[in-house]
Structure formats: C-alpha cells, structure tokens
Length: 109
Image (cartoon, rainbow, N blue to C red; front, top):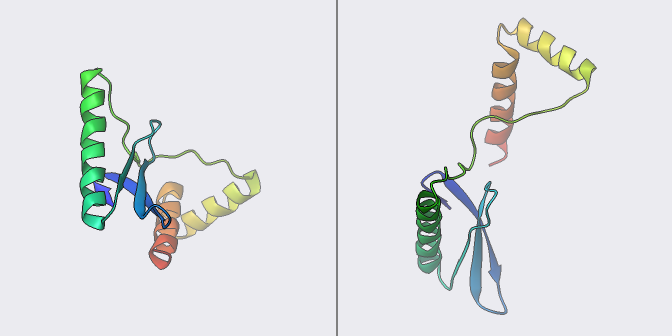
C-alpha cells in the first residue's frame, strides 16, 4: 500500500487472523495492523499521519521513503564498461543506469 509517498509491506498472521504492516524506508519504526483490508488501510493511513504529526511536534523533518538518490560501489572495471556503454548511447552514466534499472523493474513488478 502507498499513502502520501510512503510504502508499506504487509504480512498475515493466520493464527491470529490479523494483518501486520510496516512502513518501509524509514529510520523510525512505524507499524500498523488490522483484521480486514479496509481496517488495515485505515490503520496504515493513521500511522503515517501520526508519524508526520509526531515529527512536526518535535520540529523534525520526517524521513521521506525514497529521495531518488543512492550510493553504489562497483568494481572499477565495471564502472569503465558501463561508462563506455552510456557514451555509445549518447547518455550520461546516471541516465543510462536509470534507464536500465527502469527496464528491469518494469519486467519485475
């Protein structure tokens, strides 16, 4: 589920008959639960809103699930090969990698 740019992962506890969820991509732990999809969605939205209110009350910037930036360390030879591939396609290395990752993600939703 997604709400206000925040993503969650959900599991089901068959024994308890309860859905458990967690907002992912945050330093803080934000969880929620419900016995139905509707209840779970409502609890998720309330948890995100509570998290945002909590951050505001403390004067802190809330974590954003994903900023669009990440650091990647690769072998120098792979770096060189990828740079050459991007040049051949007339793209920056960043753009070329973004395109490649986007194509892969589209094939693996």
